[in-house]
Image 1 (cartoon, rainbow, N blue to C red):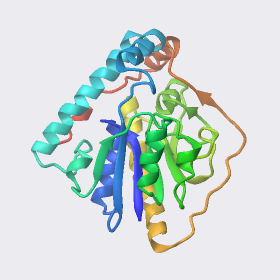
Image 2 (image 1 turned 120 degrees about the vertical axis):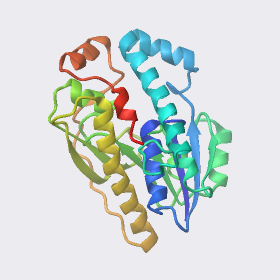
Image 3 (image 1 turned 45 degrees about the horizontal axis):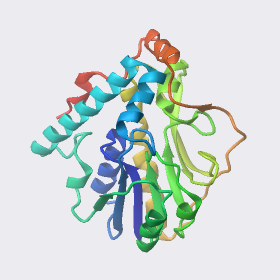
Image 4 (image 1 turned 30 degrees about the horizontal axis):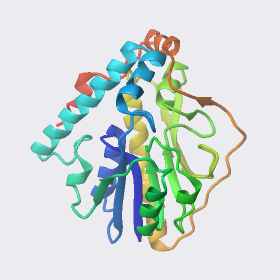
Length: 270
């Protein structure tokens, strides 16, 4: 079976999911290709993307995200040098050298479609890809295209659900594995898991809890495909809630609730 993974370059949580799936041998006997996109905001260069976040979300939010990204890069390097494969931050690319990865920008382009079609994927897995996947791409694989979304769909569709769960003071968050259809975050739900926000102090900690559940879901999904078992899904209920890029006033509410985006000690697990 050929597995195509669409993801974001150097994404903290996507790296963990892929790394853990490789460790679990979920990709065994399969050909795995990973197409990474390098966007802050799709179809805009990085500077423009950062400027948009500065305008909408403010200085503190934007700087926190940049610092978190550099903390991850450092933690990833240290984990690799110390051969700590069990570290949350160990690079997925060093777990299984059979996995091929490359940068593929702009899923809307004809050459991208042709490139993906030529790889003949049996299933596509979107792991925190920032682009909306065009219909001509998600309809290619015989087993469909699935996506990980860190919320209990149909609640908290859209961008940064882990932030919004905390900003809204929710006691329970969650994660969903669902099929990709034309309407964003609307496809049939394959699996869901609740995640408590009780006792959490950072968005990073919530995202980590969600991704650990996601690994179980994707592993189970791939196991069923390998065994030739039917994968069932449940249609989503009617639209519940949708959120976009956090604005300054909500970042302020998030902080007033006592949350931060991350703490430096969270990147020391080696």
